[in-house]
Length: 325
Ligand SMILES: C[C@H](CCC(=O)NCC(=O)O)[C@H]1CC[C@H]2[C@@H]3[C@H](O)C[C@@H]4C[C@H](O)CC[C@]4(C)[C@H]3CC[C@]12C
Image 1 (cartoon, rainbow, N blue to C red):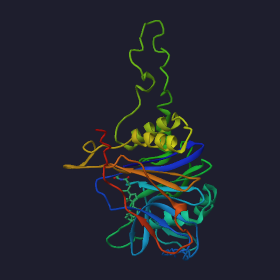
Image 2: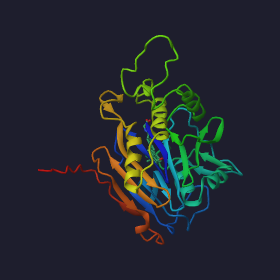
Image 3: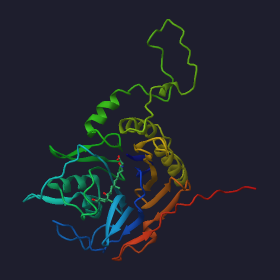
Image 4: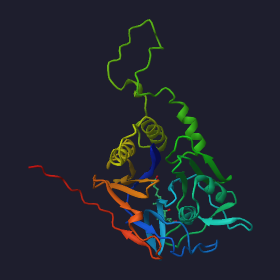
């Protein structure tokens, strides 16, 4: 399972937790402006916006899990096993394979509005990257540096693009149902509630944090949707980049999956392999991993973006303890 958020703090910060049972060997990958991007059913893009994000590379192609572009648009693919449905290539449509969608949108859209226009005639084609890398059942969140955010879901009913008023995405069920479920938690608050159940009875507030007594805390995607929304909506805005990115990671950590808590097969557990977040205005990509709580950063603008070869950075996975004596 995964969780993705956009956090407003002066600048906007966008990224995700990647929860899975295996590390796929992803790297931080920068696609510079002149890297020739090939698509199965769409024209090549020889010149486009530069992208930075978490990705694996196969046959010199960046298979992004999530990323942002130099215009301040961010996008993440999250598991959507069950409802996800991709279609055969359709005449007259912009046929984009599911594994092409992140590079396609980030290479060409300078805002969420532009992404919406690109998606208006899109068909998510049921093509596999290769026999070994079959299409993954995903849905997507797209956000930009103005704070706008949408959810993209291709189901048996076709391609749906929803405005995302909370700026959060997890996994199943379909996005509208996540919002309906959120209504059940209208009362969740940082403040202790009034005694409305029996006003004449003395019901003491016997603990701090009473306003979130009924906040779900499970690993499941409905629980994470509610918890991440609560954490994000009430997160403070810091006075510096360091404070903001620190707050950002605290929000994602509220829905982190620790090893041992989510058994997906006998003795196999899903866990938060990495958390990442980018400053959408500055093009700085930050991440931490399960093994390494240090916040690391890669600034796309410190690379020459006018080049044509993929640029990669190894994920720093070593915990460094600052021994003070
Ligand atoms: C499984 C995760 C989503 C995390 C999640 O929700 N996980 C677990 C769960 O709920 O079961 C998704 C996010 C991005 C996906 C990858 C990207 O889409 C890129 C690539 C696309 C290929 O079609 C399949 C492999 C490959 C490399 C995908 C494998 C599955 C990934 C890594």
